[in-house]
Amino acid sequence: MTIKEEVVVRAQAVHAYLEQCLRGRNIPGRLLESMEYSLLAGGKRLRPVLLLNWAELFGLQAELATPFAAGLECIHTYSLIHDDLPAMDDDDLRRGRPSNHKAFDEATAILAGDGLLTEAFTLMFSSPLPAERVLKAAACAAEAAGGSGMVGGQMLDMLYTGKGGASLEELRRMHSMKTGALIKGACTAGAILAGASEEDVSRAEHYGRSVGVAFQIVDDILDVIGDEAELGKPVGSDEEMGKSTYPSLVGLDESKRLAEEYAAEARHCLECYNGPQAEFLKKLADYIVHRIN
Amino acid sequence: MTIKEEVVVRAQAVHAYLEQCLRGRNIPGRLLESMEYSLLAGGKRLRPVLLLNWAELFGLQAELATPFAAGLECIHTYSLIHDDLPAMDDDDLRRGRPSNHKAFDEATAILAGDGLLTEAFTLMFSSPLPAERVLKAAACAAEAAGGSGMVGGQMLDMLYTGKGGASLEELRRMHSMKTGALIKGACTAGAILAGASEEDVSRAEHYGRSVGVAFQIVDDILDVIGDEAELGKPVGSDEEMGKSTYPSLVGLDESKRLAEEYAAEARHCLECYNGPQAEFLKKLADYIVHRIN
Image 1 (tube, rainbow over the protein chains, first blue to last red):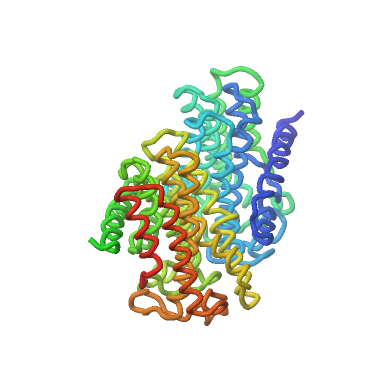
Image 2: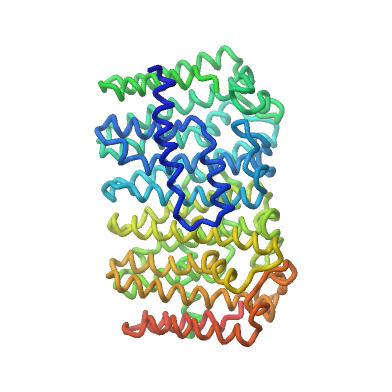
C-alpha cells in the first residue's frame, strides 16, 4: 500500500466511528443533520490519524484511542463551520459542497459548531482508559483548541486580514495557533493516552509542531498552484481576501524548500523508534508536503 | 444576611476567580477583551453558586470546586453571547450594556463564545481533585451543554419561534434542555466533585431539575411583568418575537402557581439533610421564584 492508501484505510475506520457516535443522543433532528452534514463530509482525518499512530507507537491498541480521536475531528469540523460563516471568511463552498450555513442557515450552523465542540469532549471522556491519562490528554486538546490555540489563531487571522496582511513573524504565530496547535495536540494526546514517558511525549509534540508548520505552508502553496477540483474550493482565495501567505511573503520556491525542511525535522523526531508505526509517521510527514489536496 | 445577600457574597468570590482565570494564557488581546467583557459583566452566577453549595453539602471545601464552578459560568456566558447574535435572537442589549457583537463585532463575538466554551473545559480540568471525579463531573457538564442539552434547546427555540410558537409540551422540552440542563448539571456536578453517593447525586439532580423549571417559568413571567431597569433588557421581547411562554400558554396566575410548586419540589429534595448548606439551598429555591431580575 502507498502511504496515501494507508491514510485512507485509517481514515475510513475513523469515519465509521464518526458515523454512529452522535446517534441515540437525543439531539434535535435538524441539529443532528447539520452536525453530521459537516462531520461526515469526508476529509483526510489527519488529526485522528496522527493521534492513533502516536498512540500505537507507544503500544496502545488503536480501538482504545478511537473515541478520543473522533473528538479531535469534531473540534476540527466545528472550526471549519464557524470559519466559513459570513461574519468570518464568508465561504460558500467546503469540500466541494455548500458550506454548512448555505446548506442550512446561519443560526443552525453556529449551533452545529457549538454542538460539535461540546460533543467532542463527551467523546473524549468516553475513552476506555485510565482517568488520569484521559484528563491530561483532554486538557492538552482544550489548550490546543482554545483562545491561546486554534480560536486565538482565527482571531489573529481576522485581525491581520482586516489590516491588509501579516508580516512573516505574525504569519508564523498565527499559523502555529490556528492550525499548528491542534495538529501538535493530536500527536501529544496520542502519546499521553498511551502512557508514554515525558521524553516520548515531547518528541510527539516536536513532530506535531513541525508537521503542523509544513501542513500550513503546503496549504498556502496549494491556494496558489492547486487544482480546484482536487481541493474542492476555489484557488487564489487567500490573495483575493488580502491574506498574507508563505508564497506571498517568501516566494513559491522558498515556501517549498521550507515545507521540505519542516518535514525532515518531523522525520528526525522518529529516529529513535523502530517498527511500522514509526515508518508510517515518517512517510506521513512527507505525504503532508506532497499532497495535492 | 438575607438569601439575596448570601448569594451576592458567594457570587463575588466566583467573580474574583473569574477575573484572573484567563490571564497569563497567551490569548490575543482583542479576543481576551471580548471574552472578559461578557464574562465579567455581572449576573447572578447562579450555576457556580449551586455547584459550590451542593459540593459543600457533601463536605467539599468550596475553594476546591471553584475552578470547576468558574468553568460552568464560562459555558453559560458563551451561550448568551451566541444567543444574542443577529442570526439568533438578534439582541442588542445584555445586562444593560451593548451585547458582545455590538461592543465588538460579529466575528469577534463568535470567537469569544468559542473561546469561552473551550476555556470552560480547561478550567474544569484544573480542579485539584481526583481525576475520576473531575472526569465524571466534566462529562456531566458536557452532556448538559451539548446537542441533547443547552445547544439542542436553543435549536428547538429557533425552530419553534420560526413556526410561530410552541405547544406547552414543546415548551417544556425546550426549556428543560435550553436552561434546565445546565442548572441541573451544576447541582449534579457539585455532588459528584464532592464524592457523594449515587443516591445523593440523584437528589442533587432532582433538585436541579425542579429549580431549573422554576427559574425558567419566572424568566417568562418577568418578561411580562418585570422592570426593564432591574432586568437590564426590554420586557415583552418574547411576545414580540412570537415566542411561546408559560404566561402565554397557561396564564400569569397558573404560571406563578407552577413556579411555587417546583420550588416546593426542590425544597423537598433537601429534607434528609441538615445544616447551613441545606438551609441555603432551600432558601435559594424560593429566591429563584421571588427574584425580580
